[in-house]
Length: 469
Image 1 (cartoon, rainbow, N blue to C red):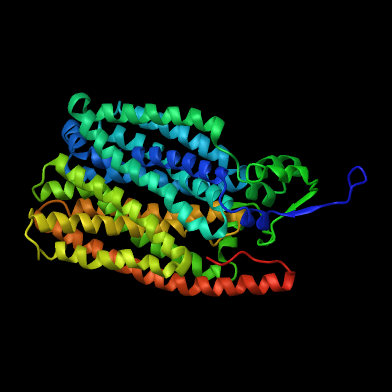
Image 2 (image 1 turned 45 degrees about the horizontal axis):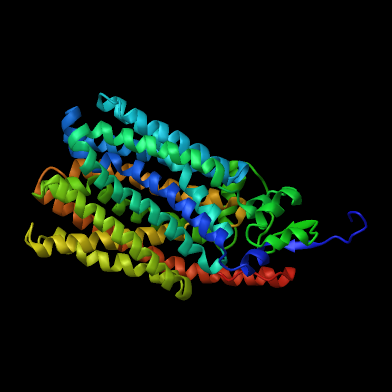
């Protein structure tokens, strides 16, 4: 009791669910899209500038694998470190520091004068890039009403895809005059400007603050951004009715929480599905331009195809998630299911290389891979409670980056030497997409079981759960 007034408790779960989409939600989405845009741009620079880098540093085909994999290895490590720190220290500081450090390392990459120096800089820069995405997913999931969560993640990852597409066009504009080095200088400098802007615009997650037991006086100003009147209601306690208390704060305890109840099935299914999807997308991201160059297309034409395919794929994912939010995650399987025959059509040589039909099928295949991958990303964190949501996303990202490290190494040694090798690479992508389809179907089954589990727990506690995804 304070000043003689009765204690008042606010269920933050119900408050956020009932707020609907507010102007603050849209501002958060825009800010997050800028974060992922520059993250995607920095991330894609090596792959889109690979022909110029290979010529400038005189790299053999065998060296292309380590050059591409270096950033992915850094991201694999950074995804775990960044996600854990985001669950302990908050989403906002991790996003700010990862953006600033990533900007600096991207800029310094322009000074690389050897393969070894390039690998080292991309490895360290990858730590920051890898640590950024899970907190960005988490802060949006935790702010949105449950029916918009997957779509929100897909929208912010649209920024990542647009950034990757922009990297191709920036390289086409800058590389002819300033070399591949100028591309990294430009990307690093502009990302640095974003880091300054985020200092004044990026909020903290209110759900995370409640889950961490932060003082009511610190959380209410954040909740007032959703509803200005909430700060005048005299609340003395804030709770999350849809979340269980977690047992510990160590990395081991937080990781163990990802396997409680039905999550014991859902977590490994997410990992395997994300692994297959990432293997497909990172073969495309790392060697999509190189593949088309080996098949006889000019580098600038290959970059245009890659950027347009990636951009359309990201936009398509948003529309697919609008359906998925209403009908369930199994609909995500539609995109990779379409991609399987497209990849096999190319891989089997059934279509003449360089023909208009060939280019059309390549483009549609890239779109299918992009739609499927963005959609898979959207569901990697939504099943976890706030106290371990970034950790859950970080482990999923770790598995994705494990695939990202392997994909360039496999592609460099098996799929780039000859035209037939490249065609075999497209067939391999088709097999990866088939694995994604199987994983999504399994995930949809266990997601329904998780929903029933949450309803049973809510019945025992008297709480009203949010709808299962």
